[in-house]
Length: 440
Image (cartoon, rainbow, N blue to C red; front, side, top):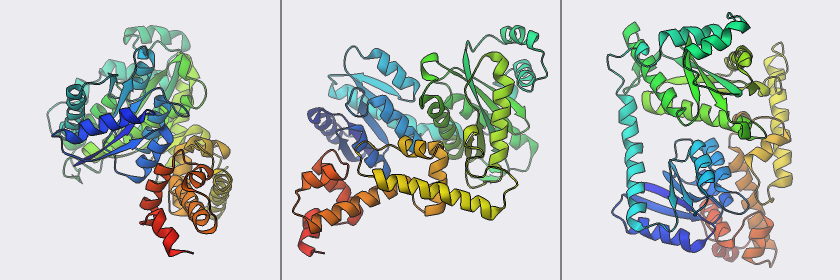
């Protein structure tokens, strides 16, 4: 059975969609309803969600921001946009950021059920599709050896600047620029495949590489990109970044999202582990060697951190400073970062609309790497810690004041008392009324 989350700031739409889905013959366990993006993220953090429907125009956090945040948490969740007329550009952008479909309001029950059934079936079939890697095709079937050669020559800096444009034209001008970023993906091919078996022969490694390349290609298919093989078990993913998305947090979050989706899909569908290095965004084809070196530097830096899988160039040096530091000094530096993170959270956990990006910005790290560090040191996730602080504060106010539920909800950062009550029951296992009766 699957769980579905419906997000809309109009309660009647939420309830209508939920009712249609519950009354359908689909194998649905729970349909959760959230009336804004922040409530939706609480459900993502606390429940197993298999599919999300979200409005695109909402106050406080719009649908595109919600999609970004969901993909930072779990890139495998399919997302469907609920769009009003005249929002086509927003819907297009949302689809580019990972949404699977968009539905125009008002939604007819048959259409809603058909889309839901289709996406759930696709999710189920996807594993079978990617798991069927034991074929006879080779890497040459999916990527031109000539293109692979030229791209490798360009990014390693062995091609003279005057030759670059001619080579790009020869391989098809598939990227028009002007902004680019690079992900370097190192595969660990000692194990893999449907049964997660040890891989010992060259033939099996080649087939597994083909399956991995297929997954990387499909994962990045929503963006303009090129994938090529730069080393025996390493692929480079060159991505074009649209002009309007090169500034602000979007410039890194899109790359982090693609990296996270790639890692998750490789692990899920063919049991292949990987590590990924991520470059900055730079302008111009002549910067391809630079972003390649940045991605390789990130990957190399990450090789000493086997318990994490993706590393962004601007995170380097902010926790370890120099490779000459001892392991004790590294631990102390990481502990300081986490201490500063805790201090920020403890001062802001009651803020409505607190985001992981806000917390990461406070210590100048990417959200993904900070999440990794925080869990490594604290033993729980950042959002688990935020929820823990909110719940303890809420419980204290319930037991020591005469404040009403809506007042407490407001004070600890929740948009509605109903949502506060749901999270409270989930966290403590009892209702608010039971806590009041039991006393301090």
